[in-house]
Structure formats: C-alpha cells, structure tokens
Image (tube, rainbow, N blue to C red; front, side):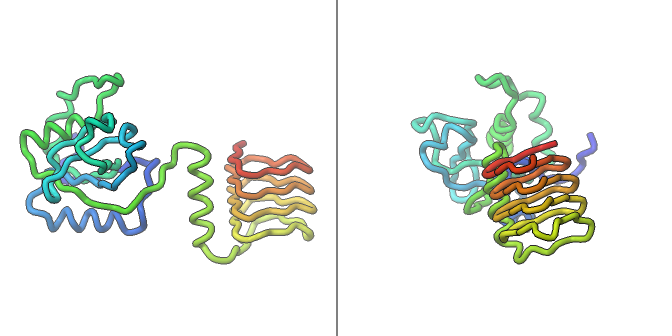
Amino acid sequence: PIVDGDFVVAACDNLVEEGAVARLIDLWREAESPTAMLTVMPVDDEDISRTGIVGLDGEWVTRIVEKPSPEAAPSNLASLPLYVFSPAVLRYLDDVPLSVRGERELQSAIQMLIEREGRVRAFHVRGRMDLTLAADLLAINRRYLASDGPFKLPEGVAIAPDARFIQPVCVEPGVSVGRGCVVGPYVYAERGSRIEDVATVRDSVLLRGSSVPRGSALANDVIHG
C-alpha cells in the first residue's frame, strides 16, 4: 500500500556493473509508456534451467518462463532480479499460483502483465555477479580489492611492527594483527576481527568479530565470529 508510483526491485545477492542501475532508470524514463522493464543477459545452455528466461520481439518482452528446460526455453536470455515496475504489476500479485517448486514466483505476475497489458521492455547487461555462496563472496572480494588501489592503513588498527602485508588487502578500524603475521594478497578484514601471532592469511574475508588462531594458515575462506 505504500507504493504509489514507479519503483525498482533489486535482489541483494545480484551485482551488476557500475552504472547499470542509472542506465536502467534512464531507459525507463525514455521508453514509450512501459509497464515494466526487465534486466536481461545471455546465459549458457547449462544455466537455462536455473533462472527465468525471456522471449523478445525486438526489445519488448513477449514471454517469461521460470527455470525452463533448455528445450522449452524461448531464448538464452536470462531475466536478472533487477526490475523497474509501474504500479500495474501489483494488481496481479494476489493471482500468482504456487509453482511446481512450491513457490509464488514474481515471473508469474510479470507474465500476466505481459498478456493483459503488454509494454514490458528489456534492458541488456553484459554480465552479473552472484552473492550466494562463500566462493561468490571471495570472487567479489578479489575483483574489488584489485580495483581499489594501494592499501591505506586506517586509524584504530593494532598491528605488530613485524607484521607484513601483501597487496591488495583492506582492513577496517578495530582490527588486530599480531607478531610475525603475513596478510594478503586479497584479504578483507572487517572491524573487530583478530589475526593472532605468526598466522598467515590470503584470499580470505574475515567477518566482524572473527579470529584467526595463532600459527594457523588461512586461505580461500570466509570466517565469522
């Protein structure tokens, strides 16, 4: 009931390239009376049955199917969980049935919108990054640390004089790094995390309040407190 105008729906585990959301909104404003805009990207055949797939007529979406078999898919274009909607889509939410997976899926409401009102537009992106598994978080960490430039030590970090850092790394205030430690490359340490004496850490994310025990070797991992 608080939605009284056009709105964006974005999943927190789906990252797109910088500037994509701004371009999506610009296209929405320029398009001819759209009722919805779906972000789409091509996927390999083996990924078709893991996502929503759309069919297009030019740039207008004619069909959306959630997790079809490759044989039943209208294309190899996946619909990502980044949308712009007019309030029209809200009229169909109560009519969404349970799917074969036992879920009420947004794609069903979008298909009703296509069939009854049309004007659902596609917005193309080159790719996206998932944030579902620990391996996804590590991949995202590597990408963004590599683009952030040289490491700068913030105030409020307790680091032993002989601790060594291998770029790229990032530590937040409130982190403690003990004697003889080697940290990096590709390490992100959130505030309150501890790396105890003579430990080595590489390609890992230390979540808030976590601890790496003395003398241990941590690699390719995400740890939490």
